[in-house]
Length: 304
Image (cartoon, rainbow, N blue to C red):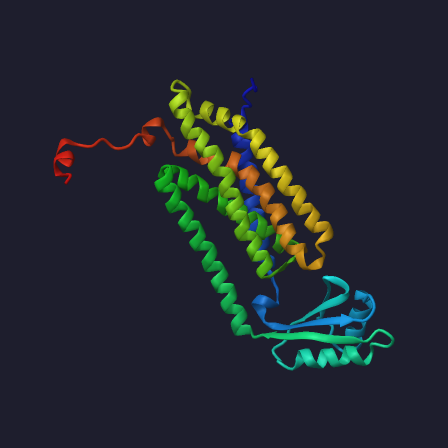
């Protein structure tokens, strides 16, 4: 039989760590701000194909010599494909950059596959819609958990998810990782992953209220968390290994996405134990909270 681990014995220390991480993340977020990508700020995207494997550093130097110092050059798929991102509001900027690269191509000329321009108004709209989508996801989760379990579980899950988002975005802001639509998708995926992890623990807590009738809430949480620990560790480690493979082999285009996921999975595993459960203790969850309300005789008589 697996020995019960006293997770909640260090909940005050964990709370101090949580507050510190959250404050630092918020400070980084508001002090440095997010490094929004072209998806949100507007700009030009150029996809180039070379006859031979392209040298990213050389292309970046060629653009700097041509006066385009803000260009971001990344490998895209094959070694002969490059992606150039540039801020700016000129729709013709992409064609000008492409012509400049074609002139200095030498024995490895470049051909343009596509040029896209995203205006700042469109980028701002995408940013607002992304934030609104995140808020709607959190509200929907709380409503679901309030009906599926009990409102105290909903509060615990939402506090946990907000922590995960703040910590992830705060670290991205500190290191000035480009925040684009792929990173936003990673943040939304983190919400789903962390919620799933939290619900597994919550479901076991609810079931143990029926089995462990004499156990206190803290004992119930310790036993429930211990019982789900192997499942949590197996899921988290396997997910982190897959994300690590993306970070190593996914290239520059998936770096921000995979890094955000990696941070979020770590934060989500921590918060499902030391934030969601601690909120249940603060709210003094009891077995009475899970008992359906009694039906009165009048309500029975009023039924059709």
